[in-house]
Length: 439
Ligand SMILES: [Zn+2]
Image (cartoon, rainbow, N blue to C red):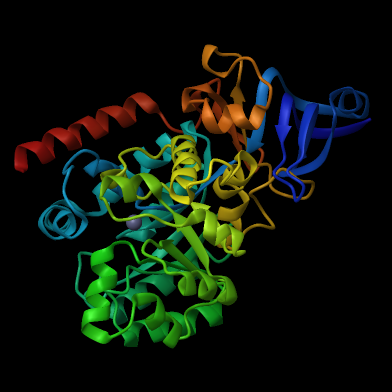
């Protein structure tokens, strides 16, 4: 009899391993933050004595969801400016509002709201891009969630830095501070091709190689962005990034709408990662990402919510369903993006894009115990012919009851264990009143 920290027994375990194995009546055994065994429930009972044991007889256990693109603190701008196209939305609403309101307190409280919502929705890892990334990192550390914090880079001055030199200096300082953190890491985050010029991008390329970390960037978000670049320079943003040597497996290209066939071949050949944000793309009418063609070409496609100002929630289950449905419509093929592929996009593909697939993204021995349990014993998910189909096409985030990160239970019986939800809601309501009064 081996002593271990934790055993979670579930009716179904979707491992998202290389064979997309779906186990029934199995147990995941965890010791010292990691999965040490996955075996039939009876064998687990016979072989292990656990300090904590969860018996989940009507539940599906999945790997923690990976939100590969968000701007966490923008939860405070949820519903602030809707129904406006991207450039007008950014230039006339988001950027002026941010320059007036965003400070350390805004980022601290907005990021905490985002993390609380994400944990309750089964997200165990998020990739962020925003101002005051040092504050976002501190809030993430306090919450117990896994995160990759973007070190934002722009050409122009913002509340975070005056020029590219300062963006790099502050970002690299944060990178050094987080060097030994097991859960919170960094990525370089040049905002977009139209806001970062060649000089700073060359430095991004240099630091990526040196530090071996991802580059998190909006690329080909809208038709307007692509057309403007072609009109002004003769080449698309993607081709410019190719010229700058940035198309390599470090790159996480977010959105990637308006792709031609040769762009998809280039993406596959160069090994870049794509993050699909279907709800944000739909809400801002940005265009469509050819997810099915990218996946068929061998490109790693992950999933993200984008910020709550353009979504307007951080619900990865909702995003997963939207992606699964939209891919079929765009491909004009009902067999496109089957449910196991959709689940991979929301889990292991995100982990791979962030360079942490050895840690998270699937339930396998040796990986961190980042896990989510949903109760399928609900009117909208019965009967269960295929648990993954129920997850993708029918389940809602309200069915998520338990969430673990590195073996720690951060959501227990649908309640946050580290974050005081009542206090948080009080704080956020006060922000809403203050900003509405000052608008
Ligand atoms: Zn974004």
